[in-house]
Length: 212
Image (tube, rainbow, N blue to C red; front, side, top):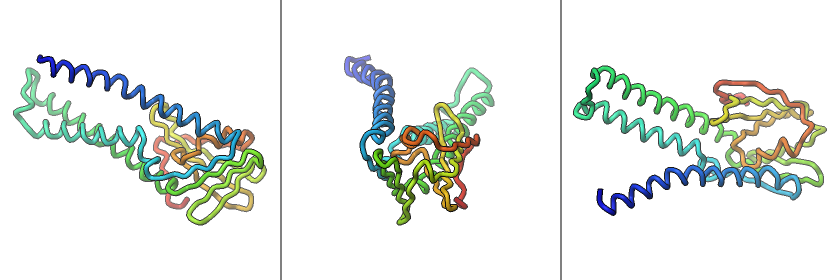
């Protein structure tokens, strides 16, 4: 291995180790800021496409698609499948990797696109003095206080690494509002309001239906 190749290998190794750690720290700081700032100061959050899709899950989905394409290419190129093991085991392994990669990517992308429909353009405005949250949704406005919320249904897969959940607020008077956990500022809601009547529902795939 030449000196240049050694340097490139070292850089790739460092990026593979430091990169994920840096991303984790960045997301932790962002989550902390969004969670605690509204408790003390008025804050307004707008969910843009850049904010929504610049996420770990979206990056992982793209990576899995690329990985699946590579595995599929190898699977279709017989010269690359030479092995000391029976050829059917090699086909089974590569085929399984292709199915798992595309399947996981399809699931995550489906959830992300589904949640985007209920997150895009949402504006959350926290007023700690009045203890109110104003949510603007496509020309409509919802004012949330602890005394005007009948119930909050939380639909979640309760995943540790790939958490997806959304919150259905039922307000007095019959109005309902959906807020996803991908909405900017949503992380602060349940610290901002401590006495909401919460009802949790576990769903393996918590898709939001069109009826909402």
